[in-house]
Image (cartoon, rainbow, N blue to C red; front, side):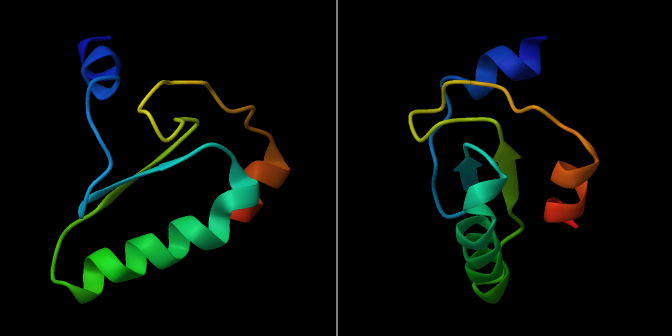
Length: 68
């Protein structure tokens, strides 16, 4: 639980991208590609809004296919 709470105070940056839902998957993919092109490791968090607030994400087989 500590990791989730600390995530709420984190901010997006060169190595962190927040994605509200899988409809924004293209945006997340572009951000991750940009991170990797700059030589950074990156993390994409799904179910988190642009302010870092955890909003959750319903995960079903369609969601998993969209992420793959």
